Amino acid sequence: PGILYIVATPIGNLSDITQRALDTLNEVDLIAAEDTRHSGKLLSHFGIKTKMFPLHDHNEKQKAQSLLDQIEQGKSIALISDAGTPLISDPGYNLVNLAREQDVQVTPIPGPSAVITALCAAGLPTDKFLFAGFLPVKQQAKISVLTSYKNADFTTVFYESPRRIIDSLKHVIEALGEDKQVVVAKELTKHYESFKSGTAQEIIDWFGEDKNRQQGEMVLMLAPNKEESALSPEAEMLLKSLMEELP
Ligand code: SAM
Image (cartoon, rainbow, N blue to C red; front, top):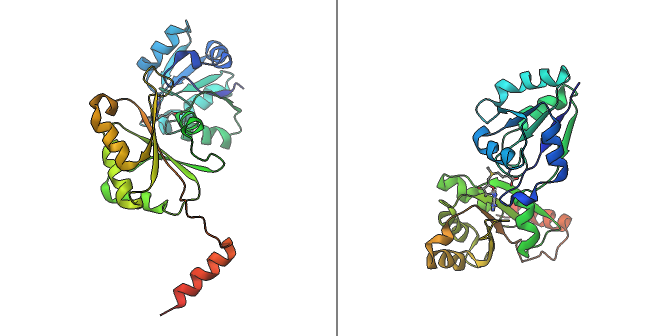
């Protein structure tokens, strides 16, 4: 049988493609791409002529088995997404899950991902972090997700769209208070790459100063909760259950 390769591609700067990604994309029989027109540009830039097949959220479940059947028959397939690492807020989970169930060999070809790229240069703690994907669009859901990280002792990373960033920053103030420290990383690896840190209000003001700043792809990061508990986790639990017993 063949192999299913999960291939990371650049998130902006084409020079970030890896040698292994190029070799793999050249050698496989088929490239399953989220958007074949978009990826066509990447492939033609590198002179890769491998045939493409569209695999997106809407047809993934339905097409996964036929791709795995082809691998079973000896073909190798590479999965790519529009940018960065497939499956990270991108299609591919159903395919990889099914591949593992059927003992198909899955080989990752690592490379860029916006979450790690943002985190490693933000200046926030990195020893422990949570990648929380996109914030929900609905207001109430947004508040409840943000509130759930109120006592987080780790950095929280969200993907966010430029259309919703201001709204989300306002919700950060509402759910987590005006002192919450935030970092927004924009247009990573691109010409206008920038990092802005401060309170959510300071960042809202920074966006307000220049409308161009509100464009481009961005990552929103929340600093861990500063107030470290002096109690051990066990003592904390005990205290919590005692408090619940109180009238
Ligand atoms: N699979 C991709 C990855 O590994 O990073 C993420 C795909 S997700 C659909 C797209 C989101 O990733 C954007 O809305 C943005 O939040 C983030 N993103 C992708 N490229 C970025 C970049 N160059 N700069 C900042 N954020 C980026």
